[in-house]
Image 1 (cartoon, rainbow, N blue to C red):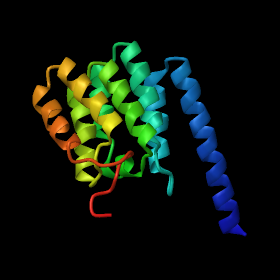
Image 2: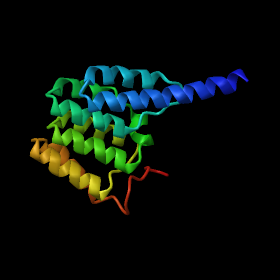
Image 3: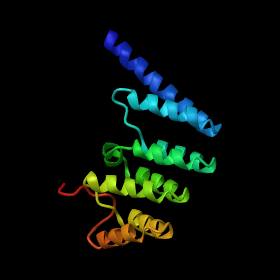
Length: 160
């Protein structure tokens, strides 16, 4: 009975935290939203969706909080990226590129590689063009070379 109650309360708390996060971002209360995100990360068994990070990155960029974006992306783990669906990765990459955050974008790319994921054609083109625009031609060229090896769509686990 206690276990069932704990699971139910935890699920309710998670949904309330997500709702609070979304409302705080909508109101541009971004420091509070970061606190809620931090609380979500500590919830046992809850995996942060990269779309949540992307939503916060977009709001931070809109509010001139570039340094905070860098700190936020430092908190993204290999597991966050590997667990993400392709759209979550594309969404955060596009948000970072729109915020002109080349180093943070490169970090997400490196996390993909570290997690053993290959970049599909669409994400590769987004990364390559965006990083070239931001002056990171070295990484963009590496991505272009990698695209010559990728077959099929979606992120594919290496050796899977």
